[in-house]
Image (tube, rainbow over all chains, first blue to last red; front, side, top):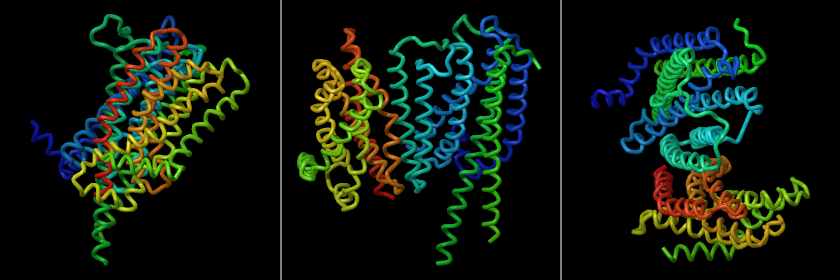
Length: 246
Length: 46
Length: 219
């Protein structure tokens, strides 16, 4: 199993994997997202307390979930880069960063638009919201290290370091902020071990939306990683061409 | 079109922004991929 | 290692700029924020710990390009990397120097600046002790920024921006400690956690920073 997995660390095999899988992935993520969002928008009842704003859950929860998962994926691939020096691993982290940034932005904006009618304010300095803002800051700084360090090898090293240190300090901030007070934000919506899950009418479309977001994330990261690999090849070819001419 | 009541602005805006951001991200990704592939093909021809 | 610390400290104090720039920065920030707020004395004393802490963070983080760049330019970093001295020890001495020549001085200055913010001297002393406990971690984070800044040829903008989000937990614990003290709540947990972060940072960051420096030297 492990050898089969590491086979895709070879850019050639990876390219084949992307070429075969992306059309299917695009199709399925599109279908799932369409089903989930349309179902959520048109065919769910209004909540007796929250009214129609409950429909925002179908964009808010999946994007927030994937924003955190994307950071975890970047952390894992950064560690793989630092330990095993697989180039695709760090390129995948680089490719995932803008995706995670967009998901974080979507989660923040949709959360604000949900908060305004429910809490009376777009933004509250509540533990969950604040730690998401901090996650957003960390995404931006991670992106900046890739933009500002010209040398690819150094940028890979430094960005993985930033990801590692950032994870630890983001967790510390989360812990510190949790000690402030109990905030406005409700607790976990989806958990396997609790009785207070949301009603089935919302549960099924929400799960479909989450699956759609997961598939979309995988698709985007695969295609973006492939793009980064191609850019690496271009750079290599140009370097060879320059040497050849000189 | 379901009746969204007083909150239609918030629901519609959040759906709209989400779909815009996701579509923009997909289009950006695909266009970058295509341009990279074209560039590589041009280099290989030389 | 002690010769390294002594050399850098002497350079910082002799040039003057090494200590006067952070101090001036601190003073300016602490003066600017109340001017922006206006003469609302009660509000000043309420947010004084936060103002002092923000001043410390920025005056430590704004001059990071002077930590490693001089050594890199005159080649002494290459010599140290080639010598028997572990790079981690060199980095550690840099953290100590940064802390003494800014964190410690700001600690001494903080209670007096607290007075112009209408902060009672006793609370000001607590605030400066929280700065003393927390600033080693800030110095370690700042040195990481200095290491990252050596890559950057676009005006050393990256280093400060990258390390600023890392200061968030320290800021929270530091200000919470002072606020808990002035509200008469139990404050010991906050200062213990803050010192834990500081100790862990000065133990772990030298390895991370020397990793960045090795990358710089390989480039």
